[in-house]
Amino acid sequence: MEVRSLTTSVKPQNTQAERAILGSMLIDDSVVVPVMSVLSANDFYDYGYRTIFEAMESLVKQKRAVDTVTVADELGNKILTVGGSTVLGDLVRDTPTSANWESYAQLIEEAGHLQ
Image (cartoon, rainbow, N blue to C red; front, side, top):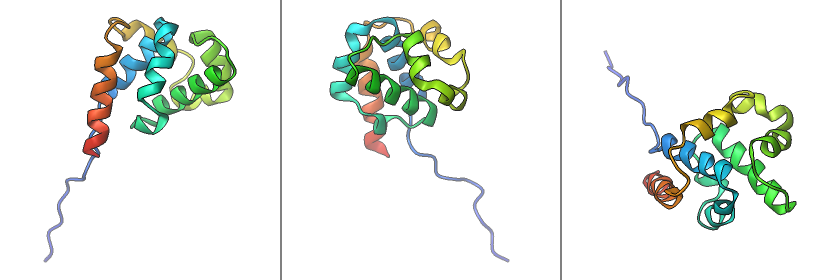
């Protein structure tokens, strides 16, 4: 009888850093462009966080502000696929400071390199 492993391979990820970088961008729009110079949507493991980042990218291309109101508007009905209407406020609430955005970006990059 063949025995199969019940373990599955999970890609390296750091969703806490993903949450913190998005929260940083929502808290302080002065970090939005610098973050986008080092990260892309493909660096995000979590689909919802990737979608939020893409909405932020779209706003920057339109030369619009990035905050909880504009991102929610840009997401439109997609907001349901990223965790609902409270997700953006949760990101802001759970981010200790935007000052550490470079550290959060580095953690995301490191996890991505391990994938």
